Length: 115
View (cartoon, helix red, strand yellow):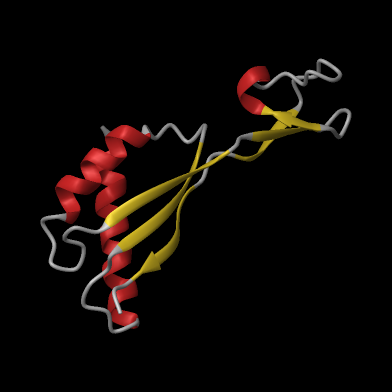
């Protein structure tokens, strides 16, 4: 379960952000999560609730997960396509010479603090 490790890393990052911005409480965190990141949103949310509630800074804070669609580009024909239905093989020309453009993200998008 690498989701717990991701949550611990997020908490470390959020503690630094809070210190830099003189925040004592964070009420909401938005996370961009790529659909092929390998992170399971339900597990991530469970881990978040468990770990965040053990900190003063994040106790009760909401985690909002925004799914980023996976898109791949074909180096052979230059066209892009949805990754999930087609995988690494270009549906336009059949080439396996492809590169994932987006969809592997795990990044904090925004942080909200109570007024």
